[in-house]
Image (tube, rainbow, N blue to C red):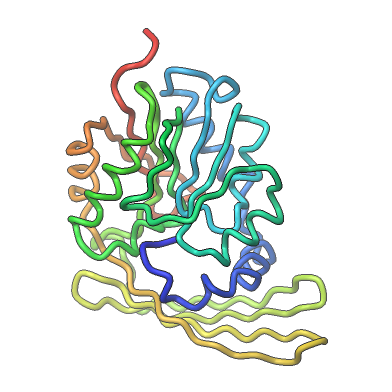
Length: 250
């Protein structure tokens, strides 16, 4: 989840969770990619290490990492998202907090921030603060994996998305239109939720996300004392930044 909970869908965590699972978002495959990247770079193996998922949402990536890492935990700004995550991940520590300034009092061998959540950060200073805070929760030799939002050169203005999914007895439709507004993208999203018990509900969201330059991401990692690499992958449209903290076992 982002630095702001103004976006309604993050307060409707049940709809969010059901929609992305119904649409077929492959959390298992995405988590496997992350583990492979971590294993290639981390000072310790996942089984002997720990993972913190920041902006963990409803915990679907956490569920896939649990059992592969010795310890997993999650942080999200939305209490509603964490409530859904807790139901699906009993026993996993979950903390409500902002990615820019939460403090857990411990470090991890891997930290992740997925689904372009950093795009909700409004300024380069916010990006610096978030990356520095994530880096501060890494052990020496640890790995930070961040899925960015689109950069200006790869953003496609006018993009329209449309899906209708079934989740149990409920049908959810989602239609979106995204335009550029200066250094941000502005996505208007319409949801219609049809449930046999509660009838039909419609609500609209607007997502304003920063189109940071790739150099802004790179410089934020460098200022945090990390060594970043950009990785393109078919499962991640905007790609991934993978950054290591120097140190750890030789």
